[in-house]
Length: 144
Image (cartoon, rainbow, N blue to C red; front, side):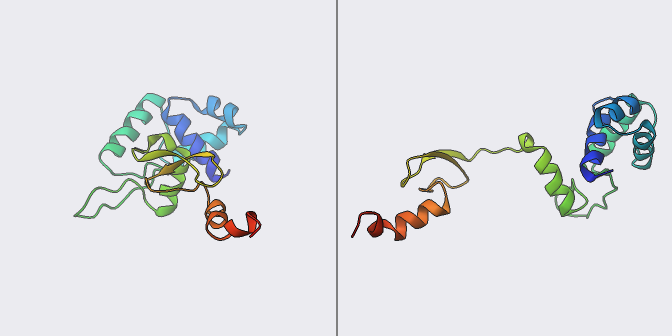
């Protein structure tokens, strides 16, 4: 079983799906799904499992990506992830969860193509290639 399949099993289990439905959806055997769920603390009846995982996540006791226990530090904000790897994996699979307020739509000063820039309102070019061509190749294109 791959890490992606394990993440899908967790996500589907928390949505309320049973072992057989998850196994059919992912093309795995029911026993593999059941053993994985039991090992990660997601065994038993679906309703109880979902409620238990939500309570544990609310109290910041588990990683929201893999389900491992997290040792919280005494100061600062509570941790959501057990490691940097889990944090990156979770954000890669859940981009809609982000609060991206600083999205700017611009037009490239060189090629005229419309692009979006995150967090930088002063960006002029759609890519590094356009920047280099506008900055250093201007004379060559005009034949000078």
